[in-house]
Length: 346
Image 1 (tube, rainbow, N blue to C red):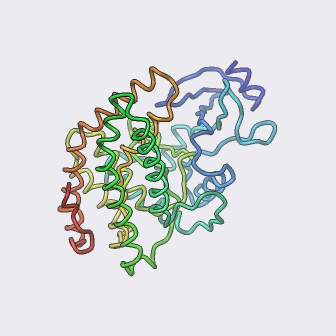
Image 2 (image 1 turned 90 degrees about the vertical axis):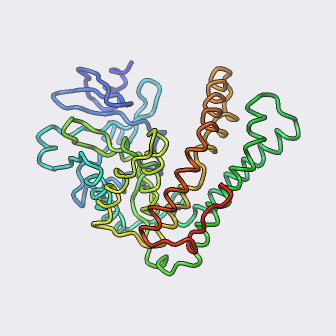
């Protein structure tokens, strides 16, 4: 079915299939391709295409470009899933382009370059505008959680997860309100806000966002990951990912990453405040609860419930991280406690 769908959609005959990270790939006529699920696309398709075309036009050929189907569409149905088929560069093309990063400092510097060019992109918003809307978005998600909280409270808890949700919700509501307040205060009080510009960035930037093709560190970028938002979104999400995926937070790695970034794009005080507000927002809690109460499958619901308890057990780690980030990183960058008051109740 895969081979038939591919041939019908693109006129390409698959000679060999392979995996590259979580994605499927294949070879055809001496070239390699990767399949990116359309459902991962964070922007409208024409916006994704505009971001891709622009980044490639300014020289970033590591951004993958979806092929047109025989019907001149960008996506095709393959094995029951709508996907984008993107050619992968050859080893020779990679060597020529030089998109190779092995250290956090190199990665931070390249991200700054992406943001620099992204700020110059002429963007006519068609989808949702994330820039400046974080407090509004967080309030909407909090209202949804409040609705579930009131429902479980009214119907009385039916499981241990329900009980844990009722018990933990006030704490995470407090964290969310702090995050909202930090972002709102920064927007109202910091004069550097007027110089800020949105840019092409990523939905959830991490060390896995750019697909590594070789041990030498050759990378390609998924166009499905692009959004248009404040650049510190990427810095905050990369930091968040390091926090939750390392036993002990790698402060030296963070310092190298930020140092590489700020060589080209120094952050304003407003950006630092906004970055911290995003770290304070308890995304891990929202995703755990939203996934649990939306799930309709018993086995999946049990697994999500167990993950929720594991997350709650690790919350002390998050508290320590937020305190250390505020006391070390923000203080080093000249952000005082008057500008970002410490969360004393943690």
